Image 1: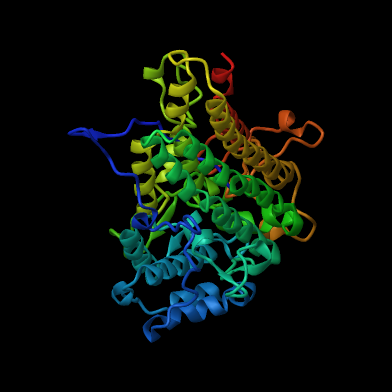
Image 2: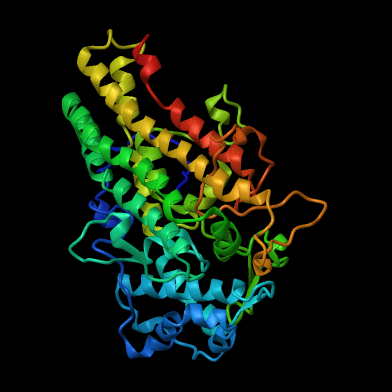
Length: 467
């Protein structure tokens, strides 16, 4: 479930009169077909015999957890070196393996929460994370972007033809939860190339071409929200909240779930204790990229909105960047230096320009239509979060699910960890009545999501055109 990341729109860099070139997606490990998701698909298995001890545990992961044997098997693993992982797909597969094994190790024995990661996992996990430039914790990249395959290699990228390579609960609900995010990423990612072409057309002052490229991106952005709404088809809210959610939790602010002091990484920097945010769709790079391209800005609620110099980017969204792969962060940084669509439209239709022509109005309408689809996506995200987190947080676990009961201080409200889902209040006005529930970054979840949605709507240029 997807969220957004903060950025402040920056003007193109100028050096000796030359503009910074627009980014080439492939230079940042991004596909013009699938966006931030590997094309055609991630590596499904490490083939080197040396790494088969990892793959063999993954083959039996769910049965080992059910029989409470996972920890003993992991404790007996040999300490493997990552030196044989030569390619990007191999490194991503290893990172994903270690992420899922480690979080299964910590959370997979009911109320008995492991307080440390054993050396056979912690040491190679830290090493491969350093290579990818991402923290050693289950992230959105490890759980979603690099953890799927096509059922039919010649088929579509629709959810029906996608399946997760590994799940920590072994449920079809978790598989669907992961796959819907992958489908959203692929559909939304396919809009990036035409949007870059629109940015290139801006540089040539090709007004009609900018409009045409936005119209190509529009139906792809429209399908993104519709794909997210399909979450409700095959993922039960109670299964998500009480069985799946805890596995996505990190080691930061997790006292309520049984990790009061973070996690000890055995064999890493003198058994260093780490405190990391868990997996959340806020770590997706797709919507931060769209925010930058369309000039959608997110600020701290306490920022002085009347003084642009005092506006501070939303701290939680900035923090999310730390949990994206380094190459993807690089693309976001590059985009922030060259984004030009909204300034271009405002220059054609703002107070300093002549009255807007029909062509400019058409351009602005295409721009606003794209922004509106991002806003609708965030509406749907709020609906998802309400059903899957807010509503479930008010209820206890179904009878017989005691292993999944959340430990909370009786003097505090229940704490829910947001990890890729969204929230709704659309049903019977729930949105206004929900108790404050924290996300993984320590922010009240519903105000955070609603602010992101409202920030999106505010980026439309229609009001300027009407002047």
